[in-house]
Length: 197
Image (cartoon, rainbow, N blue to C red; front, side, top):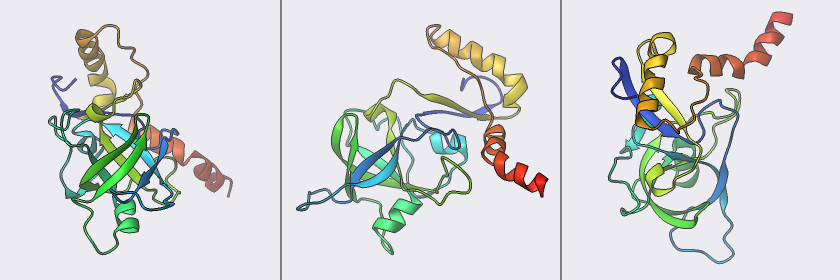
């Protein structure tokens, strides 16, 4: 899809903002375990490089994931601003080591970036702690394609579908949903209540 004219950024992710799905795992804010330490909850995302650019999420500190962040590299993680402020107020999260929990067990990861807060369930919810790990270090079978570009909705969709088919015709392609539609759906109840008033 990146080769389609008009496409600016392409990425993959497990759960997109305002999609209604959440995947929550625990994490430990220290590399070494402490006695009777309990994990802290955080929403967990496995994403590809360029995920934040594709969604327009700012990187506030550190760096984005790169193709070299693969299974043979040091495990890394990008944390949300809410998580960084909650765990290391007044200090930098970059370079900290935390233990994340996922399908593959507990992994010690180095924090390489801090991303802006994203509301994954509803726009009215407070910012939640988020963990982002490279897809190449923790792959999942179900992913969503994120495409950012000019006139993606009507003009580019056939070209994007064709590009995916050229890559692998066995990949099932579901419906394309614009972020504007997701935002509208997330505030549908509030909009209806305002119309009633």
